[in-house]
Image 1 (spheres, rainbow, N blue to C red):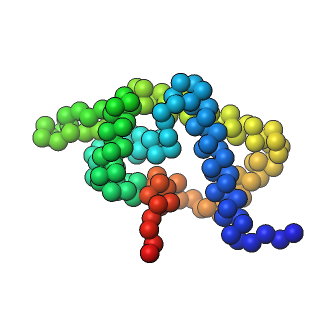
Image 2 (image 1 turned 90 degrees about the horizontal axis):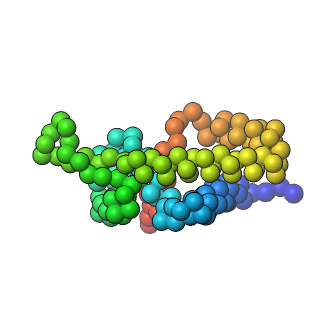
Length: 156
């Protein structure tokens, strides 16, 4: 049975969603019940240099207001702080806290475990081949952190 291109896209999104939903459940079981995918995207962007709401918004392709709300939630939960910029005392700078990095490491370990579960389901060789083929299809460009904004983009 031949599948359509749309079926392939849905399978890829379904695979992504299956992994992310399982990771969220596992994080909750570890005591991080308040973490959502956008939080991970935001913390990774902040750790990579997005040190303001404007820059975070640009990196995630969301509005500055949405970025500010996300920052507020992350601050409230202790995952990021706002500190004076050492280069310019008039500016404030976002930083991921030790707890934020702990959550990101826990998530990475969970994704490693989920990958191992998939390997046990379909075989390590098959999973390695799937990853190799996806890497060839996706290309060498780094994965962008703007997935939340891209998924919500209104094209009308």
